[in-house]
Image 1 (spheres, rainbow, N blue to C red):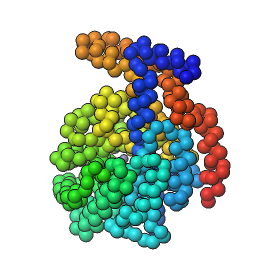
Image 2: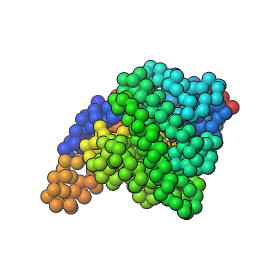
Image 3: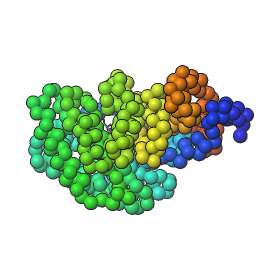
Image 4: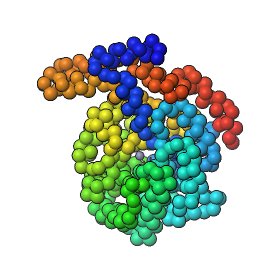
Amino acid sequence: MNNTYRNAKEQYAKFGVDTEKAIEILDAIPLSMHCWQGDDVGGFETPDAILSGGGIQTTGNYPGKARNPQELRADIEEAIKYIPGKTRLNLHAIYGEFGGKKVDRNEIEYKHFKGWVDWCKANNMGMDFNPTYFSHPKAADGFTLSSPDKGIRDFWIEHGIACRKIAEKIGKELGATVITNFWMPDGMKDFPADRLAPRERMADSLDKIMKVKINKKYDRDAVECKLFGIGSESYVVGSHEFFMGYAVKNQMLLTLDSGHFHPTEQIADKISSCLMFVPELLLHVSRGVRWDSDHVVISDDATKAIMQEVVRCGAIDRVHIGMDFFDASINRIFAWVVGMRAARKCLLAALLDPVKKMREAEDAFDFGSRLTLMEETSNLPLADVWSEYCNRASKPCGIKLIEGIKKYEAKVLSKRA
Ligand code: RNT
Ligand code: ZN
């Protein structure tokens, strides 16, 4: 324990906060790292899926993106050298290993993901899963599970069922629960003449997917809402109200993505309300700049507020935290590392808040003391606690981190055509 940390520990203790306890809790909280930052949401289908039809978009073409599962795994291994704490892998269905063959989305099986499971086992990582309802000819019209065409709906229903079965088997193999997240891009660019029918079809399709019995010990399903996307500005079938209702009705997980609401609306305030009516939540921590742009997460106010709510609701066990950003304009390892570290740093900040004292003041209607506590603790030496935590986890900080990743870039990434 060095002097800087000892000093920080004393300063927090004055507010009744135990930094050791905070570090211990922090280290056990899993964060799910999304595979799709590594190759700009491309995946490994044959022929390559081109990011499209999804109302999502990557921008930038920084060299060195992963071109196959081996490269993606090597890159994730590199990123993890700089990411402290428990990291899970969040995989999309298009990232299966299809052996150069065309395997359509409704035909995928566990065997296509076995390589990932073995790798996760070897790296002591849990796994999460996502059906891929975009970048596919049958999603090109902008509709999948809510399509007016029964053939299209049936195809995507089969995909959803296949994914739940794969996730269940992954969970069984890993001996740990997989969270499977359903996000469908379905929506319209311009004002619809019928907002109801697509929603009825979406609910009906999801019912058919969820009807298939899956062991909840190994797989639990989440539905992700969204306000708008590129090409679905006027109407998204799976809106917040739609999926909040669907999740409450079916007692499944609701996914809140920080980029999926009005640009000035934040998800932090929604967490406590949603937790009252759904069993668990999945978070997609992202950073929208003026729109759902999926910038790399940083320790900004919005992210801090999200983590505060998770901690203050006492909901660490009921809120699964996943990342969802994809910046193709910078070295992708930096993107992962910065985003994952920022999310965890915000969690640490939340765990170091003098919540007990603030609540005592609040219950006594002493809002002046509450505000003062917030402000006076806002610049306590969080960085020193963070460095101590990273040291203990043998993860470099600061300049060393930049140097390390740059070395990998020179040695590995820059050699990729
Ligand atoms: C899109 C959703 C969704 C995707 C990933 C790739 O707006 O946020 O979660 O980003 O599934
Ligand atoms: Zn998301």
